Length: 264
Image 1: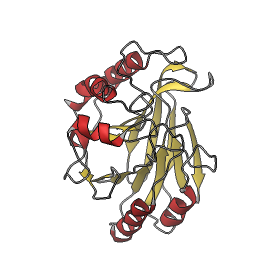
Image 2: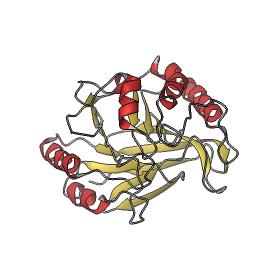
Image 3: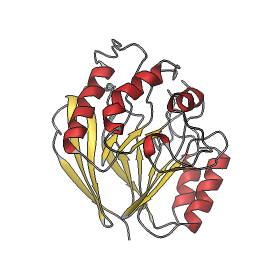
């Protein structure tokens, strides 16, 4: 698998942010992913630059077109995305049977874009934490939390990974209902990890044996200590091997693999 996040693609191909060129960065990452030829690619939110303008998504789609021609591509929405413009650009609605670019199955949750993919040895659930476009904090909301609670209660016990854009702490810029999310997943031992972006950082943590994996940004970093790039992920029924592919920023961890084991 290839895990990306925070591409921040603008309708302007010459866009520069913090000295970085997000379009060029994504082109480079796409080239690296194609060389690796993984099973699938997943992009964990903030696909668009700031406000998810109608012109942002055609640019984004053109840049990932080579990936979509070779493999399923799963997309998560972040706080800089616009759900309406995203759905219009990709020709999908939340009620349709399959997710964007051939990835998984779309779930019927009002006002949210949620995708599930049961692909042994693991199951992936792509949640929607977009609260309001260009408002930094995120929110799953009651309808999505209720759906998730029922979904996990009836799901088969294969290792399950949740993807959400927002960070999982108590800052005002993070997922506002993170405590309720943790309460939902704690008793379901099949939930092994939550993968997120948003912070433009690369780090690992755990909560009650559940791995919390913060994947780096493609577009730009917030601090020079952080890499820009993506994560090559090899998933199994027992755990995961995660290898950083840095293309800019702090390159010290480029090529380093971190192995994690799922909780029993």
